[in-house]
Length: 399
Image 1 (cartoon, rainbow, N blue to C red):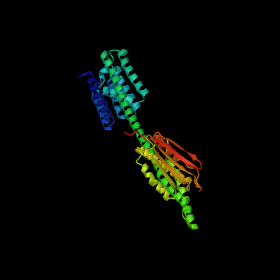
Image 2: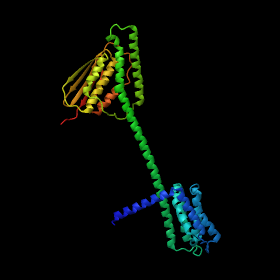
Image 3: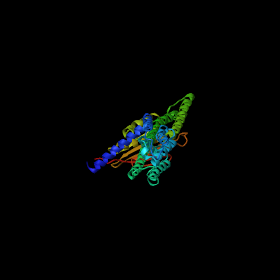
Image 4: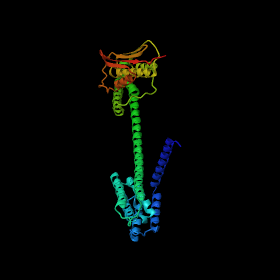
């Protein structure tokens, strides 16, 4: 077996072993069974007699060196202190009388220290245990606790390895908890981003579609007295009420858009109308009483994204013209060039007062976002008595 493959195999087996220990340690039934077995084993071992350790003291130390495992879950600090202290008695004064069950409980306690105690207390437990082992080898006379030097080294290494194992298990648990927390935060952020993007899409489509049609209702009702002759006063009042309610609905819609819109997110793209649909848009405006002329210069292939942007610019400009100059004339110009499409919408301001306050600006914001996304330029502002919107949209190269 090659060295790299050997190391990978050992690492894999170690990870599997640690995972198995972690699963067993999380099962309360397994914990209780192991603890009871160790206590019974320690009580029945019967190896209490030793010249350095009286039999009653050895019996008590054996019980206290294993029984506290049963209370480890509820009283970790006290239980671990009793376990380590009781087994330290065997290390110092009766190594030959130290029952195997006590040794196992001692090692289990050292594994549990980094898992159940704070880092500082766990280190204190490790250092204290190592000092006890060192003191037994250096200061305790041979007739009290006679043990060869290699046993002392083995005890010190066993304590260190047990504590390191517990530290690794604790680290794995903490890493698992942190990964779960990070995954939950990522999930929450993903859901929040998806919700925000959905809100942006809703706000945009409400403004581009619903607001446009409601605006046409308001324009049609406000200009009815100019296009329909011999209207009776009740009918005129009814049209005025329709226009007022439509303007109120537009105001409420802008309020909703203010709640939904989050400008820091990039605009959404979805299947939308094309430049060819501008004729249908203009027909609807004309049917509502508006005066719109369309001028098209040139021709060429236009990408879908540019067609969508051009349509939305014309739609928004016609909506604004109908809102602020309901009886004015509007000119829509489309100029196809090899490298760009120019869209220009100009209204003459009209003569009838629209009766509206300044708009929210969402329409222009939407236009600028769409144009900027395509790398184009947009100019919008007063032009004489009216208002002009002009956008230059670069075309993708065609082959």
